[in-house]
Structures are given as C-alpha cells and as structure tokens.
Length: 122
Length: 107
Image (spheres, each protein chain N blue to C red):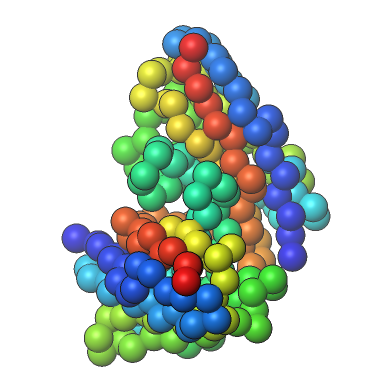
C-alpha cells in the first residue's frame, strides 16, 4: 500500500526557514519509474508546483521560488525533505507531497499525501 | 515555464448535464496533460493522464481529449459527487505546471 505523509511545523514566523518532511511507504525512492514532488496551495487558490526529486537524485525547481528552495531525499529513511527559506505570510498554504509515476511514456501524480497546513505569522 | 490556462474559472450545471473544461498550453506539449479532481480539504485525485487515458477506478463519464496546445475534460451525465475543482497539469517539461482550476457547482 502506497502512502505519503507530510510532517513539519504548522506555524512559522516571518523570515524563518521551513523544513518539511515527506515520509513514504509502499515504494522505494530509488525506483526509476517514480519521483516525489512538493506542491502547495494557498487558501482558496490554485495548486502551485514547487520542486521534484528524481530517482537518480536529479532535482527540479519551480522558477519563481527556485532561489528559496532545496529538495533532498534520504532513501534509507524513505523521506523527501523540502527546505524553504525566508518565509513570509504569502507562503501560508497547504503543502502536499505527491508521487509522480512514469508509465506508458507519460508521467502523472498517482498518490498524494494528506497535506500539511503551514501558517506564517508573527 | 509552460503556462496552462484553464477556462472557465467556474461553472454551474445540473445533474445529468455534460460539461466541458478547457486547458490551453503556452506551447505545444503533445499529449502530456493530466486532469485532477480536488474536493474541499482533500488532496487532488488523478482522473485522466496522457490527455485521454482514464485512471483505474475513475468513472467512465470522465473523458479527456486534445493534443498540442488545446485540451478538454468532458464530464458526461454530471453527478452530485462531481462537485469539485478540476485542474489540468502539464508533464511535458519541468517545472510541471498546473492550470488555475475550474470550480464545478451542481445546481
């Protein structure tokens, strides 16, 4: 059974650094057909793609936040970590991790975590 | 980055109606489009991948079409449980961007 679960602080102060962890089960982060992304959603707004880690440890970042984000993975712990620096109130959102699967020459998100609501406030 | 423009932003339709949601890509992306359904307080759920392939377990009233830059999600015989927000997403090249969403309301 595939599961993903986000964990981390639910409240951070402006200018602080946010560290979120996605713990996965039911698949390996080394599987060449799979990768994990972080996606966020401000209250009442659309999904925003943040970052992705591939099985070969390559990484990709969303353009608008690229200089504030770092994604990494620990295969032995089955965890993917997202670090976002210099948090501001506009970063208040639900943060999801999701598994991207590669099949039939295409890629899509087939499993998602439940999301973690992060509020940025002093 | 590839921009995905969805329309309409919202729609209201009756049970049994057929509804169309369109997604336009800022460049040709072949058939690398996926469609997701999101209900309030929940994570998105994939409905269609690769523009027209139905994910396992998804009702057949959901259908996807299109290629290149124009894509459509069609919901036939709209049901009360289809009330949700729908997002397109391109998987042609990273960053894998989403559309702005279409909220579907049942009259």
